[in-house]
Length: 105
Length: 151
Image (cartoon, rainbow over all chains, first blue to last red; front, top):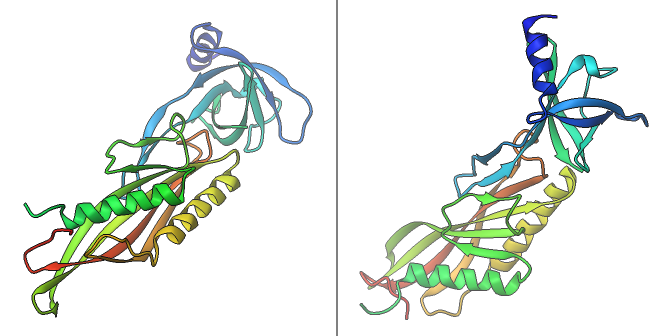
């Protein structure tokens, strides 16, 4: 296990940072249990030369090895009683983790 | 001071018109803070006055003003497609409400539609499908030379 594997495992095991979740591939009926690092950054969105909007994004970071296949748009992730649809899936440079951009369903 | 500035009279009349014709939509004027699409009631419109151009060559002793204003619209929905459709619907309702309309306030003339931009927020920025448009209009206002007052 590399230092980065170890750091990610520590973060995912931390009860203050990570939560239990379930992931389902698009078109599949099977849910896979895993740990994720959720985040909900809120930020201003550049407006059309006007007031502009402010929105909250929902993201989750997970370990790629916890999934039977690579995540992609259309998959679903649920935790805390809410199900989200995967909109974006970005791997890190080492291929250890994925950051998912999520939409409320 | 002879009365209400023509610009303020025009913007007030436009806001009143939007509120009357679109009772299910929140209408605000001159708001500077971003609209929180997760926490605030949508659909929502923000009216802002913009440029002011004067032309004293049209009529002896009177100045024809062109008042530009914008209406920013915010909408959200359960799906990406529904959010885009909600934006299109809100924009069409705004245009229907304002374009060609003439306020009853003396000195104010027709509203003309100019242009519009649309933006559906990226998924990376917003978990809830939402977006905004910015519709631009202009309005004719006429007053005596050097007297941009309504009345």
